[in-house]
Image (cartoon, rainbow over all chains, first blue to last red; front, side, top):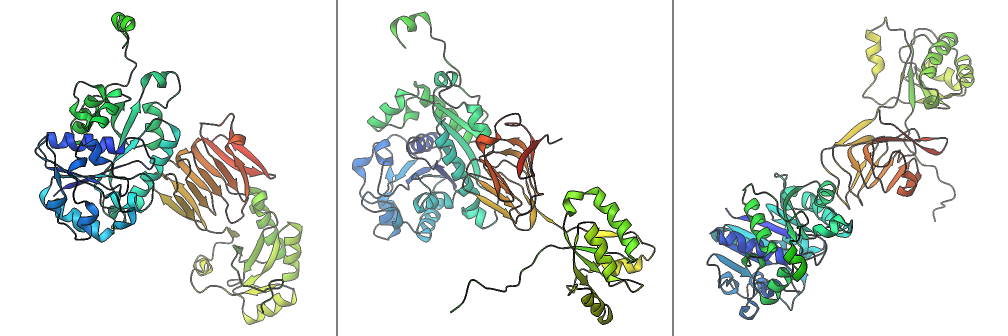
Length: 269
Length: 233
């Protein structure tokens, strides 16, 4: 039985798609058959981050409407054997998704895949609700600043009241906190909330902390999920995150200010 | 056309009911005085109904009404009265109220006839218990009940109760106690970081809650229309 994981946040621009791509890729690298679905209908981005935008022919909405079958719409990743992408439609809007349609496709995917990653759109409207409704687990992506934390709290409320698990009285969605764009230097200066602050407010288990990194932007621009850049701090942090998501106990890194060596100070970091 | 300037509508209100077997004016007075001494503010000008179901002697309603007046209580009427007692109550200017068929603790007291003490039944409050965090955007209302939250009330969340509110986690959102207008209700929380606290319609924003108790446990009540913060313990 496939596990459905939604990557959500409420607030936009916090790194949902980057995280979906990285986590999906990371799980697939472990040999699990994984599909990442872009629920952001109309603002399709996942295919860009995954570097497969030129290969999109049919999309999620086409499959829901029966204009194409899943095999035609799924894009197989060229780097990792077990990774697939189901792109969003660029020309439609979020109302094109129906609960029945989404359920049918998820059921069909569940027969074949081990993990289904749902990349949620921002906001709390139907698109985001559709992405989280069928989830077993949720990765709540949060930036260490107050408005993002507030929106994440809102989404956590939705997860516990508006999901299928909540409506059917099943055990609740397993919630994970993923803190992105974390900058320890700015935390020390008091310009950013610390891991502890966010953890205390949201009161859910911390899954990972991704440091603010140039590598993320570089990766997005080149269409390579940042987790494949294993020399970068962000890439390593996502590898740790995936390990924890799969139940491994991995210590947290990149939480403290790195002391700059003499050479680094002279020549710049 | 309906006229909204004059309407007569049925409504339900909590009333204290007095169960007392010895309804002589003197006995009622001493028993009531004892009870009032325990919580003078709570019973001040409280409307009271006397249950006369199990009285043995014929009470003097006018004398009893006088006692209530002296003690600053408002005697509204009687309930559980026989046809004869009803007439007498009416003569004394009292209303005759109908008992609801269920829940008549008077029957119980018949069995325990030794019991002569006055028992003033305060309105029974239910309690609603929520065993999770209340997230931003969520709203919990405990109608006619106390509310207990075993978790944190997040910023942008609202917890409302007609009774008291107890929060075992941090209160970051809004807490509205005594929503039905009872100014004796209070808010108890383990850690006070509230956006707003309201009791019986009076409210305070977080700015007025800053100070000694901010970020600490506290008990918030209303005294002479003023917010009073106190230690939880």
